[in-house]
Image (cartoon, rainbow, N blue to C red; front, side, top):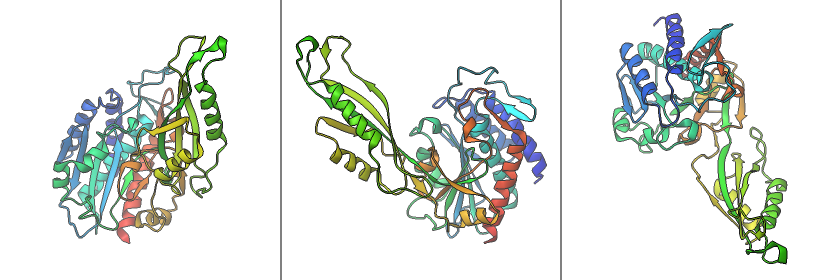
Length: 373
């Protein structure tokens, strides 16, 4: 297949996607756009919810499978936009528009890569493409739901299930990484904390002020250091991001004070270990409740064939401080793609035209190297 044509079509597809609002849980039209494009290219595609997927040829369960995954939902536009976020514009070889960088560029580059290998095949490997929803909100209706969907399991012959998972089966998660390999990724643990005291009248020095209990706990979160650091991800990082009381009267000592803790976890700890440590260190006046334990830290071994293929191709690797769908994929996954994470969610978001083209070349070279092992 003509890769120069695929590169031009990838750019046009991204323009089409930018022009369609696709906020998380509202991705119906971009899903349809991707479906239509794949069908125009002669690829049979399937859809569950707003997740679109395709399989290259017949699945052979004796072979490992490579999943190419990226998302087509976006955040809402930053209020500081000076350009229309839904009008794709190319200026100075930069394509502007909401979602151009995160993760439209990686997505269309992966779609082009899939089309290349759909036509030519990958010796020794199965190939599956998944353009998924709800990544920006870590929603349950995205890649996590797709991997459990009965139709998807049927169409892929269960190659991603525990019963049939090949030892080398893996994924490339398309996100803007400047084409460096994010082999590790911090987990995200959000804790809702409640400090409990006793209500009273402020003027009469009554009660037990829950805010003071909260402040002591917040100081602990600020100062505590978990012992196990990660070479790739550094230490566990805890940040208190919200604090409030239900009391609105200035003269009432509040009985409860609520605060939220954002915990970024390295691969050296499980969420359960983090929670147990926090509970053991805080006084009984503080209770904590995790909102979710889904977005766990992850790491793909540097000896995995996919990473070794990248190293052979002289791709750099690092540990990512941000969380993506990599956290929800229950087998080894590598986060990699064109674009720059620093541009994500920014006003006047953009990606370079050459970045998309280079992304396609990078993905294809990586897979060629993987297949040569």
